[in-house]
Figure 1 (cartoon, rainbow, N blue to C red):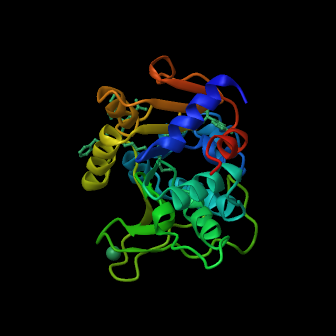
Figure 2 (figure 1 turned 45 degrees about the horizontal axis):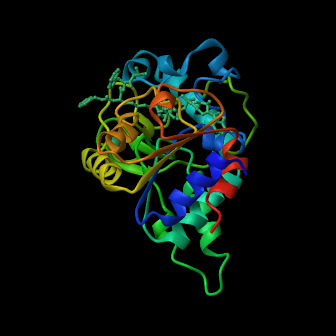
Figure 3 (figure 1 turned 120 degrees about the vertical axis):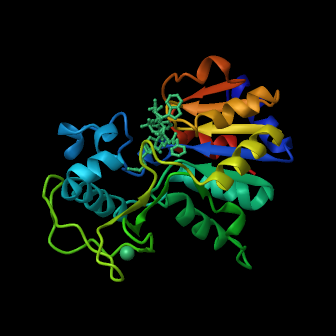
Length: 264
Ligand code: BJW
Ligand code: ZN
């Protein structure tokens, strides 16, 4: 273990209160493409910034819906990786961890369920459940009446990433359904966001994993920790706009670094 990593590890093990902010990089080793590296399927011809917007859905709802249906199938085949599990085990053992994720894939939630069953008797998984700032891929929301519902299973004939599928409609008002995620230009849940900023400013350490730190307001969360003179540990494969400000930067894949960093 490098000296830097040992120092970061000690900081985490001694901290009373920890905030963990994650992004797409934590799920990359599960096979979920990140946003800015993605080159497959609709990502080849459409940038996420052009599909994950209310304007795109208004212009061509079927295109946007088809992209999400493809991603639902893809994520449905993925499993939490060693990074998700390390965070979940740490949160359950540690007691006071606020896990905040920008990811919509549900893998932190599934890791919490797995980690809770590893002990005898099983633990309550709740302390390892994340706050999902950008919503949940596997949930629908009606674009008319706002009703939320679990997304219908997407299995069946294997459709490729570029295959168009008709948009499902609300069972109550027949308006178009959309995924229950936060698109560019849409507001995040105010109280969840406020809680995350407060937690970061009050935490003994803020751990930031696998995010490009480009998308606001989530990218402001570690900034709130730094503004309150709290140490920030960044785990990433590449430098980000946060890197020059981070207290410790650990360069490498989250699935390799986190089990070592968060070992209890
Ligand atoms: C690894 C790894 C491995 C790879 N291990 N690491 C201030 C300044 C400028 C602009 C703005 C601003 N404030 C707001 C804005 C506008 C906009 C914004 O931020 N734009 C920027 C791009 C410039 N923000 C918004 O529009 C937000 N809303 C808003 O501000 O509303 C205002 C409002 C108020 C009141 C009323 C109405 C409106 C909303 C942002 C929503 C973002 N939504 C998405 C899509 C979610 C649904 C979906 O999945 O389709 O969220 S966009 C996409 O980006 C997704 C992600 O959660 C988010 C962040 O991406 P993330 O997680 O960082 O992924 P990547 O791919 O960027 O990075 C991966 C990283 O992992 C890389 O660094 C790799 O190196 C690393 N990595 N493998 C460790 N194995
Ligand atoms: Zn409806």
